[in-house]
Length: 349
Figure 1: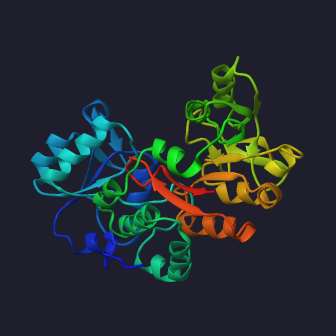
Figure 2: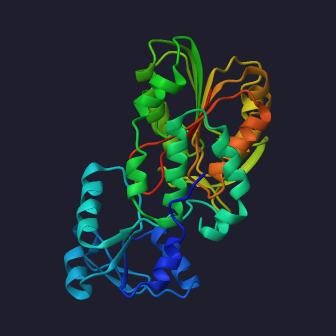
Figure 3: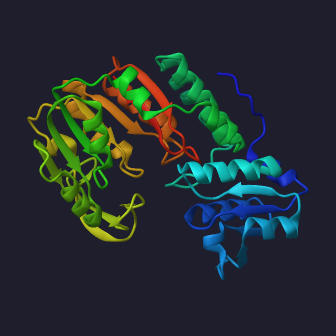
């Protein structure tokens, strides 16, 4: 696997003579600022969209809008510090990129550290192993672009490997009309709706969501739809409890603090059930949830969709884990339009 990048974003930032300015606030900005500090790189300021900047102070920086930042700093290095799929926001980022040197740092949603050249060197063997097992040219192209993006922070690598969810349904999953679908991380029912739109019929749907507020909305969204069982539990490696930060949104996740919620393996929850397709989007607990599905995977070989962007190691650990359970899986990788590299998924069929 050839790399186009030979210097990481963080080394590039060390060498720049321009002020380094963050676009956005919140958890992503915290992680970027922490990494800059760790590397001895000073941030010069923070800006946000007009509706978010009035009177705000973030980490000691008065938050201004882009025009104010441009008036103060002139030419700067802009670091995108939030995630988005919204076309109008993506367009705004594109307009700024035409005026400024702009990057989208890849900081993990969960876990520590960053995917820099050192990290790449430590895991080059596993990365090459996964690259060699990918089943088609588009998957290999996505993988190369994803590694180059993670190292460089250049958004053009994300843009060049985008595809639509519909393409994955049509060319990879090829779902039939008698599927038994397990939605691990069903959120408020959006991926149940995606499944229903992709099939002409189905046998059963098991929708699993641990967050209480999301679960209530999931129940409402699926009320009246036949064959749907909703389970208010976290899909994990074994039966027990997880401390769960319940935020009533997509950022609800297992954490070191929060409310204890029941957790269980899919092997336990679905014992004796026919399973043909499982989607895992469990906010950084994908590896644990897969380990908790070992018996089903070994015995039934369901089709799998697994989110691969929450942790640095997901891009190699997930396919190595799944193919260790069933070496006869074909492995595909796709990325949907999003900044940063969220909505990147492995498919196993």
